[in-house]
Length: 438
Image 1: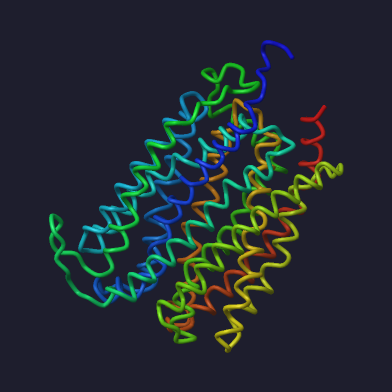
Image 2: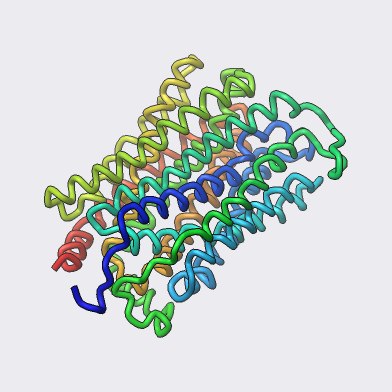
């Protein structure tokens, strides 16, 4: 092995790094998903509509999350210390989540959610790049799948904890806490779930910043170089990015509005929703993304040059029928049972998608390419997913009780488009992976 090619970190160290980054990602999605179970209490207290509330989960969060993720965060992740960047971001978004528990107006909550997005912009670009330098390509799909499990573990925890809060104190107008003062019922979840993330930021600092592999002169890399690479291989980058964006849009519509749909259409209690949907998301979502990453690794080992994109494609083809089934059945028990295969399939492609991007992107461009990829995915997926569904029910159907129809409409349009785009990406991806392996 040449001096220019450092050895891979020990497997034990790599596993620990992926675990710590996954825990940080769990807290990212806990803080991101708190709103889903608080729709009713916040609407009652602040007098807002479904669509206005969805903007707190979408637009307020996504704009700063995505813009900062490209610059300066992406640039820092390609040139500077990625561990320190991620730790600072975790601390900031945890603080801003706690601040969400102190604001008393829609405008204040909107600004605080923008702050959450600023902090969360740091983690994914830094983590993707770090994992690519900790884990060899043969194990990278499952490593990125494990990291991405944080999405589903975080949502599951957020749903269960906020469900308990809503059941216990959600209907209380004002409480009085020592040292803090007046606390409204819906604010409790933010105050409980925000501060622990600050401890996770300290845990991140215990990781070693991995040596960049084949990075070259990252200081000389400009965004013009990144865009040139994307334009030259647009057959892969554009189709993958917009295809995964459509899957992310569908996932966010499903994940955010399942609680409201079960509460409204099936008249379940907050506690019933929390401890049916929460554990299903926790288990089925986590197993789905891990299974997708492992299957991609297995298919790649078997010689399939487009293994990762095959995983994404099959998920896209199965998604719309499962959404229709879960959101259109009239029986509550059946609707809950259908959430398990639905959430498994919604999570199945994302570990493979992350691995595909890292597989064919030069190291010195990885973080900023990932940041651009995440910019598009999050603007479309996070920024529009929950809002698109509520736009259908609030504006087009003029009936908030039909939020399930809104989610169904999103899936019926977005999932087939995702399948078509991913299919178009396959020839270019096969060529790039074969070139990278040679």
